[in-house]
Image 1 (tube, one colour):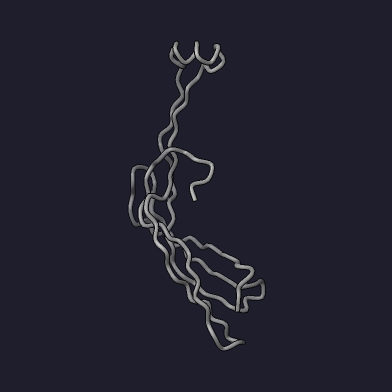
Image 2 (tube, rainbow, N blue to C red):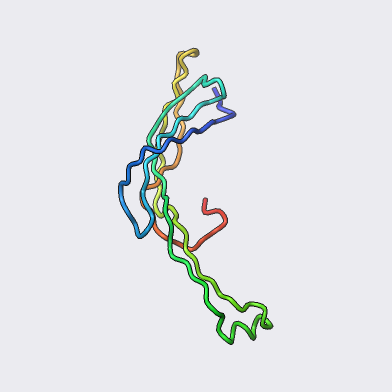
Length: 122
């Protein structure tokens, strides 16, 4: 069976496993369904990074002002909480009506840190 639609449901377990600066390694209970009826379903604990990192804003240096024709008068620096190390885990989807199962792979966080902010990291 090919799973065309995967539905993920996250439930926070509230387990603070490790702090990394002001970011936390947090456990989530993930339920994966093959469709809205839950024909095939599996549950697994995965980890995510939550928290916040330092940011700042300050007047731009004169060289920046000149280079930007005096339009870039504030310089900001920010870092975002992100996954620094991940791992693939297998989740078994049991399909009781069809009397079989499927295994799919999803990512889980293994370590967190503050890094340069990006629109999309993965």
